[in-house]
Image (tube, rainbow, N blue to C red; front, top):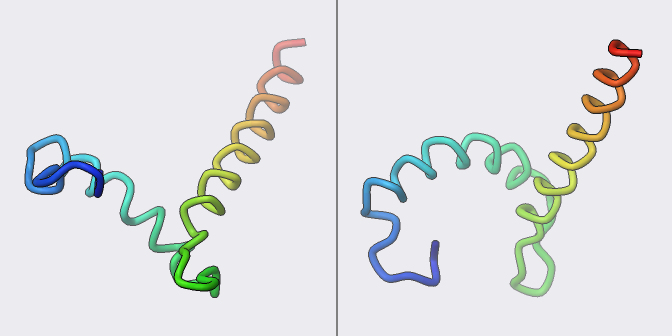
Length: 64
Protein backbone atom coordinates (compact mmCIF):
# COMPACT_ATOMS: atom_id res chain seq x y z
CA UNK A 1 0.00 0.00 0.00
CA UNK A 2 3.01 2.25 0.30
CA UNK A 3 3.03 2.50 -3.49
CA UNK A 4 -0.27 4.40 -3.53
CA UNK A 5 -0.42 7.87 -1.95
CA UNK A 6 -3.06 8.09 0.77
CA UNK A 7 -3.83 4.37 0.73
CA UNK A 8 -3.24 4.01 4.46
CA UNK A 9 -5.82 6.71 5.19
CA UNK A 10 -8.58 5.05 3.18
CA UNK A 11 -11.16 2.78 4.82
CA UNK A 12 -9.68 -0.25 3.03
CA UNK A 13 -6.18 0.70 4.14
CA UNK A 14 -7.28 1.05 7.75
CA UNK A 15 -9.05 -2.32 7.63
CA UNK A 16 -6.02 -4.06 6.14
CA UNK A 17 -3.79 -2.40 8.71
CA UNK A 18 -5.91 -3.68 11.58
CA UNK A 19 -5.78 -7.20 10.16
CA UNK A 20 -2.16 -7.41 8.98
CA UNK A 21 -0.11 -5.26 11.36
CA UNK A 22 -0.46 -7.45 14.49
CA UNK A 23 0.78 -10.48 12.53
CA UNK A 24 3.61 -8.55 10.87
CA UNK A 25 4.71 -7.10 14.21
CA UNK A 26 5.58 -10.64 15.34
CA UNK A 27 8.19 -10.83 12.59
CA UNK A 28 9.38 -7.22 12.86
CA UNK A 29 10.75 -8.08 16.31
CA UNK A 30 13.22 -10.47 14.69
CA UNK A 31 16.53 -9.18 13.26
CA UNK A 32 15.48 -9.45 9.60
CA UNK A 33 16.73 -6.08 8.32
CA UNK A 34 19.79 -6.31 6.10
CA UNK A 35 21.26 -3.41 4.18
CA UNK A 36 18.19 -1.23 4.66
CA UNK A 37 15.81 -3.92 3.39
CA UNK A 38 13.20 -5.42 5.72
CA UNK A 39 12.64 -9.11 5.12
CA UNK A 40 10.01 -9.50 7.85
CA UNK A 41 7.17 -9.46 5.31
CA UNK A 42 8.81 -12.29 3.38
CA UNK A 43 9.23 -14.28 6.60
CA UNK A 44 5.55 -13.70 7.44
CA UNK A 45 4.47 -14.95 4.01
CA UNK A 46 6.66 -18.04 4.35
CA UNK A 47 5.19 -18.73 7.80
CA UNK A 48 1.65 -18.41 6.41
CA UNK A 49 2.49 -20.83 3.60
CA UNK A 50 3.92 -23.37 6.03
CA UNK A 51 0.88 -23.06 8.30
CA UNK A 52 -1.41 -23.50 5.31
CA UNK A 53 0.44 -26.66 4.21
CA UNK A 54 0.27 -28.14 7.71
CA UNK A 55 -3.43 -27.37 8.08
CA UNK A 56 -4.14 -28.78 4.64
CA UNK A 57 -2.37 -32.06 5.50
CA UNK A 58 -4.24 -32.29 8.80
CA UNK A 59 -7.58 -31.72 7.10
CA UNK A 60 -6.83 -34.24 4.38
CA UNK A 61 -5.83 -36.86 6.96
CA UNK A 62 -9.09 -36.24 8.86
CA UNK A 63 -11.18 -36.69 5.72
CA UNK A 64 -9.52 -39.94 4.58
